[in-house]
Amino acid sequence: MLMLMTVMGRDSSASYYGELAGVRALITGLSPTCGVDIARKFADHRARLVVHADAISPEMDAITTVLAERASEVKLFTDACRDTESAVRFAQTAVQAYGSLDVVINLVDISEDEMAAHSDMADVEDLVAEKLTMPVHVTRIVANRMRLTLNEGMVLNVLKLPAPRTYAQAAMAGIARQALAAVTRGEAQQWAPQGIRVNAVAPTTTVVDEFTPPTSEPDIAALALYLATKPARSLTGQVFDAAGMARRGC
Image 1: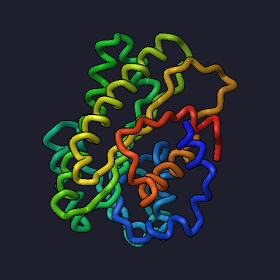
Image 2 (image 1 turned 120 degrees about the vertical axis):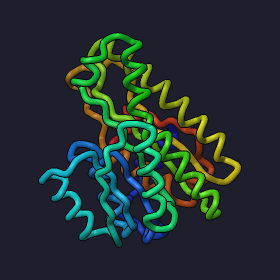
Image 3 (image 1 turned 90 degrees about the vertical axis):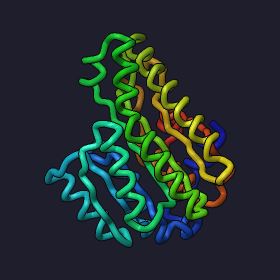
Image 4 (image 1 turned 180 degrees about the horizontal axis):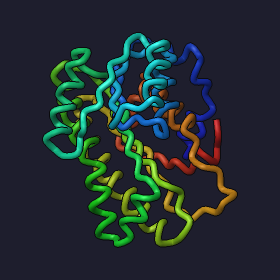
């Protein structure tokens, strides 16, 4: 938690982040309800963005327009990545957009309806495994490209879940968190010798009430910015607690 307090206390607009100008960043899973603040923060620092969205909508058109006005460059993809083959194909396309990539933010959003439709623990495991398919393959392909281009980059996997209101929901969140942690730490160990870092933001597994503030996406955006900078190059295999960021605030 100490690192979260330090990160959240920084001003993301400060010159501290000047090194992010021109950084090549891939953001997957962007939607009008997930990842907008993260994408906007990198755009504000003049990054070159590769953005993946599941579908085009008027809202996504508006988001893309805003990003294009702020970023050095934006390339938008809407490939349907529902299985291993399509996820690998997209990842191979993404790494070629700018020759290589420096930062990858994989956004995984599991809705309340999806959780409700998978009440059995085994079903939850299957759902989480399906949702992590794209991040896993994107991480491996992009990290391998980073290795070939001698680029010490960073991957951040962000898993968004509804805050648990019951102990059953908390148990489901625990399954999702454990799966994310296992994937993140495994990939971090594999790519550490090449200086490539893999971290994650995981959902809380604590039952909350109606008065508990939701996770703040600007907090996650601030963390992502920090992890993309040189001072954070010693951090890999870390699983940050989204609830901890929500409590601390910006």
